[in-house]
Image (tube, rainbow, N blue to C red; front, top):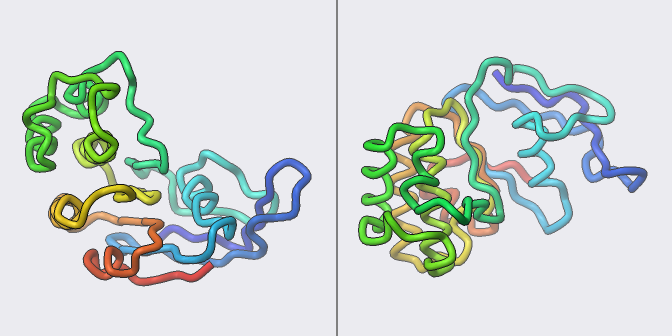
Amino acid sequence: MIRFENVTFGYRGKKPVLEDLNLEIRPGDRLCLFGPSGRGKTTVLRLLMGLEKPRRGQVTGTEGLRFSAVFQEDRLIGRKTVLENAALFAEESVARAVLERLGLGDVLDSLPVELSGGQRRRAALGRALAHPFDVLVLDEALTGLDEAAAENCLKLIDEIARDKTVVMVTHDRTRAQALHARLAEL
């Protein structure tokens, strides 16, 4: 079980973004963080993955877990094709199958700069889903996608992460409901 115990965090001398946060994430849990902008949702994800350390308190239970993430930015490597990006940490055959399921089969050899915004979002999601993981972290992962593309992505996330832990940030409650995620307001 992952636990946030009395976690306080703030960026360099600024007012804390999080104060005394207590949160439990059980194995196989689906958790959606909600709240207005600036409330610390992305910070919780960064603390979860060990990209930030709390000022006070602790995050426990993450030792040995494999994380895979989609950040708010696509973070694709510009000089690598869609398939090469998705296969960075996965078998190429798995990456290809995931990308094809996301409707990107016709752009596998394209560079990110050649893609639309929605294609780049799906390529970033494809990379995260192709990577072997215990915890899938999604930070506004479906932003900018039309409803049909978002529904397809949600179905694939649900299928691939069936017995895995999923922690997501979204402002769209219907997307959280589609993944049967419990809600945590920040």
